[in-house]
Amino acid sequence: SQTIHQWPATLVQPVGSPLSLECTVEGTSNPNLYWYRQAAGRGLQLLFYSVGIGQISSEVPQNLSASRPQDRQFILSSKKLLLSDSGFYLCAWKRDAYSGNTIYFGEGSWLTVV
Amino acid sequence: KQEVTQIPAALSVPEGENLVLNCSFTDSAIYNLQWFRQDPGKGLTSLLLIQSSQREQTSGRLNASLDKSSGRSTLYIAASQPGDSATYLCAALYSSASKIIFGSGTRLSIRP
Image 1 (cartoon, each protein chain N blue to C red):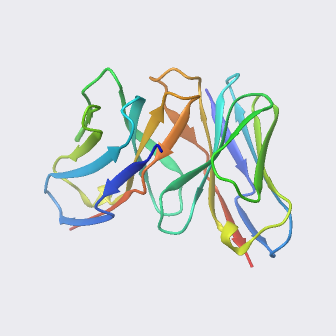
Image 2: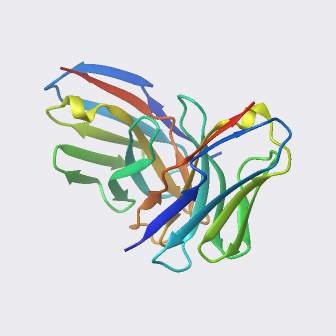
């Protein structure tokens, strides 16, 4: 069976510090990978998605970046965090582009920028 | 621009009532429409997925419909229970490179 791991679960970082959130998927190959952010009481905002190694599509221009160094690894980074980067970050995967496949989510990472 | 909208943002109903949650989307070129449930502070759990060629899907007390021409989907919950209290989100898979866009969700509260 497939599983998705996301860490750290909780993070408190000062403004201006770097960020690295990591996500890995087990039990499948060449998944579509996604990073979403959810601000308090809001919906999910798509940040990045990737359909293959080294392929990253960015949805929002900001101080975040994503990388996919391995097939089942997706990393969200920032060089300098802003207060507005606080939120609940969710990694997700989908088997491929087939429309009948659902998307599965990790348990999320709570980021508080102070 | 591809957008997904959910109205209302919050809904409170007494236990036992049937209810409908609404989702609208721009750009009818979607591949599928999914409904998710999110409990506070948790990730998302998939409830139903409707492919673009389908009209509806059912799972237990849940029924989801899709009308691509009008850009609408509805989630029908029959005989609501307090355990149904959660935030419900819909998401559209757009045909361009697997992009999945979410609505802002409807926070549902079922009163005992």
